Image (cartoon, rainbow, N blue to C red; front, side, top):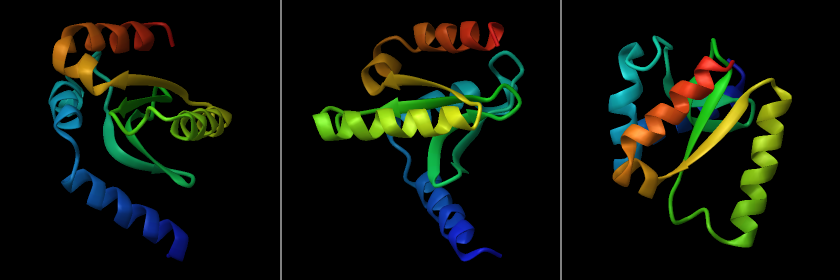
Length: 118
């Protein structure tokens, strides 16, 4: 196995066991084809990144952003990361922890609408 790929898979595995409360809450709503019958994967390696959630068939990535995504440097990194993932043909949408806690139904509706438009 490619050493680099193995490292990303191991990192993804670690992230699945240490996901945030917001990620856990969203995962419960997405898993087992609960939303629009799309299969989502969590903490999935794509190229040099591990994305929070992805529906591979729809080429849709969902990133959950917490407080650590607020500085100019972090926002610039996120934008560059999004552009790189879009080059692979994915659409990337970002939701905040606060949105998941305060308006999970709205988040799911937005994701469902995005899936419906793909």
